[in-house]
Image (cartoon, rainbow, N blue to C red; front, side, top):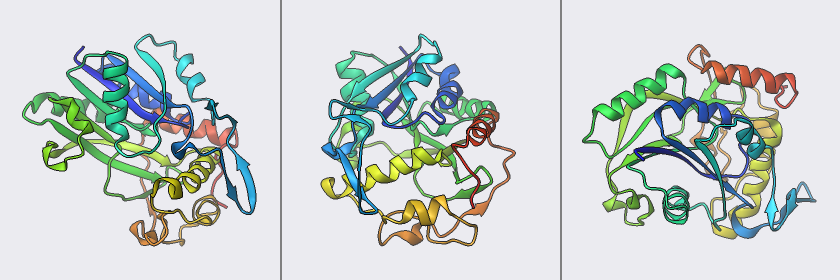
Length: 284
């Protein structure tokens, strides 16, 4: 098998995962969606606004949305869901690719594309990305450019880390803790859209609550508890300092207007569907 795509740790992803899979499927032999059976940190819920919020489901398998159902409904034999669990998010890419897909499932591949379920290519940008990747055989690790939308598709923010990467050569290096052994990450000319801040209100609320719960358990930066309500749900263009982590708010100073012309057609259609279903409401 030459090239596979792996979604290494999906807990909630129903909003755009089908659109994401369909955008890379022409360029890979198989797609593996590694579903997390429960959140990081072995948490069962969190106290939020002085109330206990329990995770939906039970400790043997929490279920936050319809990701599995949407993927299964694709009826695509090249796409497979794998159930797994990891205590913390550190090196989740190596865990998904090496521990689960390659070692546990015995999948042999020369190359891997790692994605988050909110990342979608347009057909033109996917072709540009994979054509350059195939032409530049000397590159072992690479990432496309990223546009990260904010709240709707009409605004964007900038963060330094792209949530899509391509790898070949010694794939075990995805799991190494020695940064000096990892190949240099090269920038490709193609662009992917990251919709992680433009998801449904339910999805963003779960993201926030789960982060509030596991961060103190695993020693990650603590989120501002008021972030979901004040910075995201009721966001207005004049609101600044949008980063969720306490003490790092200025890392995302503001959102900027974005011309939606480059947004993949599939994303526009899906976003319109979510708005119609009132899963996304325009900022108040």
